[in-house]
Image (cartoon, rainbow, N blue to C red; front, top):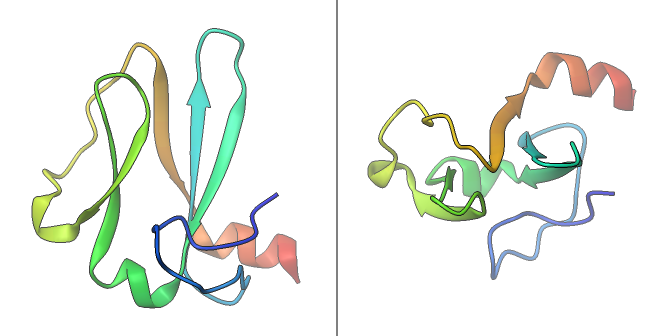
Length: 88
């Protein structure tokens, strides 16, 4: 369950009306974790996947574009139009 923004130090609580949801599908085992970044943080930050498969919040200027395939996990953005419909 998503409760708060994924950026450390942010105090915004989950709101289905904005922000971005990311899914992290871990292997082996196929578990999926969900993360939410609030609208304020997503203007300046994004999520990056480290070599070990974990996530890191980084300034958008440090993002390199496409996230390369990772043998331990796949990070994807969940389409906003879809999850907002689910939350309604």
